[in-house]
Length: 401
Image (cartoon, rainbow, N blue to C red):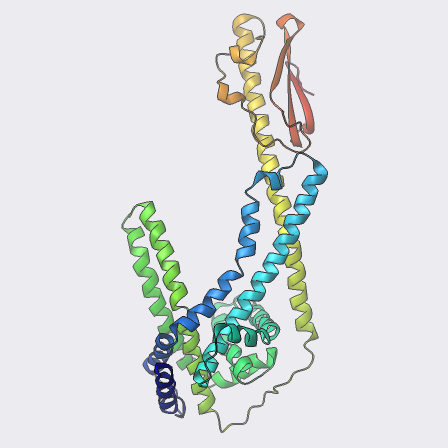
């Protein structure tokens, strides 16, 4: 009964707000958006939450990167298999995340459209319907981002393009335009009202800015770090909860402009050809995404190996200096490193896990030679650093070989 009343209320409200031939005020658009948001809160937030599911697989892959057994195998073939496994898993996770996020974004718009049509569906049904728009919506988004990033080289044109193309998603979902035609349709609707639309977006932006400032004040006042972390989490939660409001706002703005220009035939064709170049661009993006996870994992491992090699090299230099001081004081090199006063036991702890093909039990292996007139200090590097090669190196009073 309550749902029917809500739908009736919307039906009564819609002609007053959207049949007019002038652009509605910000207050009217915002009030209508807020009412839809409050009446259908759980459906909208439910669809919003679906996007979070897409992040789970990638989160698991990133957590696996923190587990040494997956990234620091001593056995080279096993290590390579691990890299391939994590790289492919990362690729699949990224594709899954993009698919779910794009579909959920389209799903929120589908949910709003169905609510306003008096045909409120379940979250599952709205998501299934949104899947038919996923590719078009993705292409539309890619083209929009490409144009926007290009235009942002000059800030003012970037803002203008962002405003002109801001209703493309609704043109795609509500009116059935193709991916690139939807961008043209958005521009067609906003032409002649660009500055007024800009002011409405600006007012919406300032409302969100006020929220951000409120949460920034404790940090400015020097609140302790634990409290700031809690506030950041709370800010993220609030941002997540209110995220559907601007989407609903743009829907009412779209319908308002659609009503204003209802008597003017559109010059934009709903069906478009020649989309192969756009699809090819999207394919290139996916190919890049295929390469990034593997390169990221390999780079991360390489950086860690070099970091440990640098630490080992620095420690060896420190040990050599301590040995020379001992020799100058006593006329011979020590029998073992632990008898060197300037060295602490912690200085001799070998970095773990070991690098590359180095033995699992690698350590700083020291022995006195030539009746105390020389020494040998062996150590292993994973990939080498500077003049030192990867593998076993031996330091003596003459240098390192």
